Length: 282
Image (cartoon, rainbow, N blue to C red; front, side, top):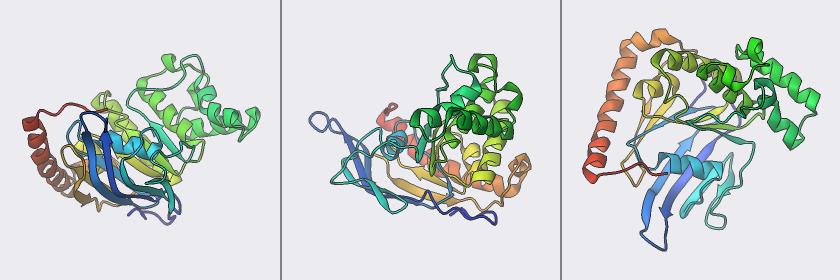
């Protein structure tokens, strides 16, 4: 569990208890998740890896309130999000999703994008939201481009602004679904360090899906390897690398050993998925 600096997070604990998800129960009965259980501590960076189509995103969507569950329960800080009496969790600002494909409004500047949520939810006045958005963008190194539109900045800057937009709501949990997948190696490296800086400041709980094992080890407190579909926990790797972290970690023997351990666990499931002819499941 994450307790890497002097400040310990007190919110954002996720409890996934015996969750099963079956799509189209009246038809072909595709089981995406089968009796999956996982405990994620408040302030933990939990990295989820596994074969394509294994059900990782299904689990994220259940936490976010986008998809219902068939059986089991999911709790956030001891309060049930979804379960037998309520299969679909309510969506809320306590759980913010950042998807693989960018979701900034192209007709709004970065500062207006970031300020949008608090203004619409009426948790801040327009002036308060813009002031906080400007401050947070400056903290993220985006102060000089706050007045630009998403199409006028690099993909890395736009993605960083999305993270800021999520954090302005002071969420308990960030749900990240392969947010850096399409980026080149250099941009991805910069984004990793940017996310770690954000985490060191906020201690927000992060549930992060990725196919990149080095990304998983570099960012995570634990790496959860999922089985091929239907998804359940295969193994959990503890990443006992001190924080704060920077790119020097990548050349350490400890890092390389952890990556190899993760590769061994994922490869076995990838072979099973290939032999079963799995395809990506929404």
